[in-house]
Image 1: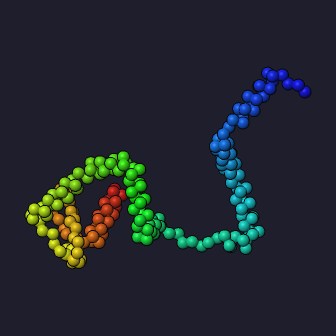
Image 2: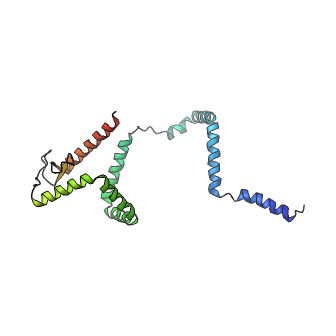
Image 3: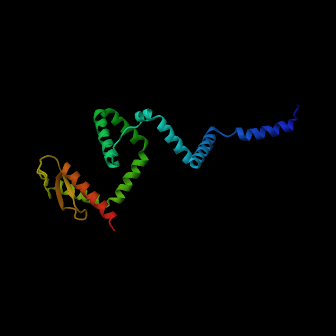
Length: 193
């Protein structure tokens, strides 16, 4: 059979329009089709899975691991602890990664600093006034924590930033505990009507 040039060109266009679909578009269409098929055949899939599990009970026992349901907060705390340990073991790599991130994200850092200054104007002023008062000798930093009595590096804690020189002197541990308690209390009050 001999085809004229016109018919060949028209066939190429038709074939070309289908064939020009790039791989991503094809994969996307395939995923959408599979999703629709699974939605239509949920019951069939569930029955098949149950039947297969019943026939292969010994294999299934090997797959199933009994895991305790761990709260998300605990998993976050575990991850934090793991990261803290990793940083302690790899200080050089951590320092390099931080320096690299800071070099790549200078705009982001300056934006974050600007936003922090705008949101926490009162806090910054209280810290500056406290620093100046300590330097001038108006306030003397004690040697021990006012909560636990532990000597060492003592930090200034402001209950209320509008009362800039009303300071409680705490060690780092007590200061962190106080801040966490205040944060949780503020979150709880937001939830309550």
